[in-house]
Length: 284
Image (cartoon, rainbow, N blue to C red; front, side):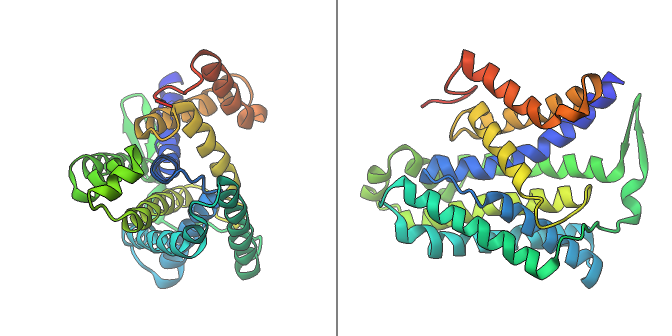
């Protein structure tokens, strides 16, 4: 039972990490907390759902398209919503992100209503036995894809030209500009990348659970908890924090009570911040 639940928690934690990484990249590099990040996650789930159920595309193709589509949405959001208020105070970022959240959520409600939807993937419920652990094929695929995305992101940020520019911008905006790094290009790409990660997470979670316009709120709150738990701006912290949260929720639901599942995250957060206020990997 314990090994099975640890596996379930690891799967859930991998997906939480994808959402949180996108949020922490945007904050760490641009110092922007995008409150509409959960709505991008929701849109990614809907894009994948419609591509699979209406267009009839393969789920993996739909996943890639959903991530790319949300990446484009992220670029547009940065250019149209956040760039005009750059340098005018963090309160302006908060106000416009709240407005964006309300706009996207209500737009989704008008377009698609409140009826929950689910993807029809006949092969997704196939059972796979890994020793004493039983897992569905879709859950195994979900954790595999999540790990590949996280690994690919690590190498991209560490070795690519844009990744190095992103790290330089995070360390010193003015210094990055002085050596010829285009801050606008880095900003757009960062928003696009963070949104693409949220879209991929939404598509993956949408293949496991129901999809509806209000589904972005809970992942947003959990992403914030993970970002603070792991350390503001730390990608490694977001990965570890996501895994800790996933494990905590699953084990707490099984061995304590599922009625308090939404509370466990904040209990862990309070405990960690009482010991290490900067988070597990925080530097500031």
